[in-house]
Image (cartoon, rainbow, N blue to C red; front, side, top):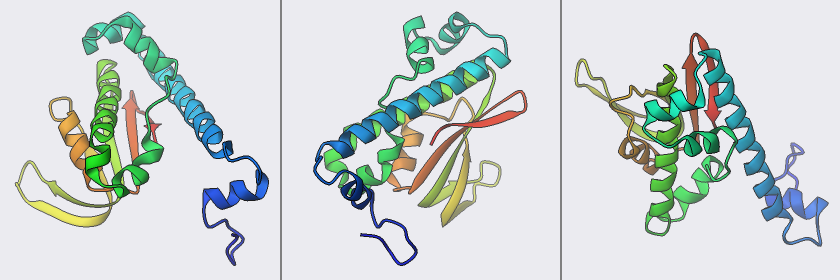
Length: 187
């Protein structure tokens, strides 16, 4: 169904108009979109690594992983799943808890990669109710909106990311900054 503003109410409404007799279209389009997003993310990682003149071997050693894992990250292995945050957090945590933990580990792995090339990582979280503690004052600020969570190496853990995901963000962007160049590496 199309709204008064001319937009589709849902992605399914869009597909129904253009693929009315193809029930598998949605799944194929989602897989293709995930593959393209993974390839783009991988290309950005390579660009960041090349900016600092690091080799894949350097990154693997600094991350403490095998070379193949770095290659997988850079070639855009699908399965990151950020586009599914809303679906995952709406459907009850018992059913998707393992998938949320897996997503938190993958985001943390991206952070480790960026930190291995000397970069800085931030999470930009929108739509979630968050409590952010100022490490200097110990004061917690709670609210709903857009928050930026800086993530120094010692605190960017799967548990931190999992906690952010459990707050049901409508959007999560992973920002990387290397030598003054800032880009999103997962949105």
